Length: 158
Image 1 (cartoon, rainbow, N blue to C red):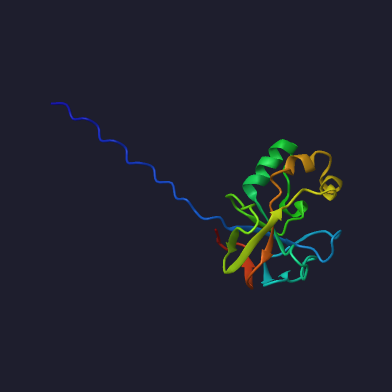
Image 2 (tube, rainbow, N blue to C red):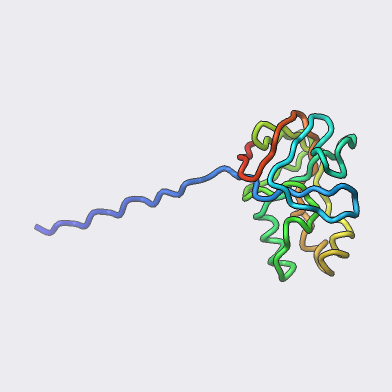
């Protein structure tokens, strides 16, 4: 009697929640973004030390490294997260874009204001074609609903 081979055990793929992989802030709108390991988010105001802190609605911008990788393919060279002028880059996953939708970075609760459109400043900094490559991949603008610390490695949830 022939013994049939045992089937291979199924491969288990762990699905990890997205995490913060980069944080950037700038003191003024045309100043270079600087990378930080953590930042304080203030409810109703945004990221302490960032150019939009205290603005009415544009508190925090968030982009996905997955979208940035796709934009890099289109652009033909890597796009550094700090040069896209977004505050928070998460490892993977979809960033919500429907106004009113909620998103959480650790204990910090955010609410979608609008899609972040790539601006002309990106073409100036990155080169021709950057704006086109980032269209529909440039992240989301959020309003900050609760205060807390956002650090590299912080888990993201919807």
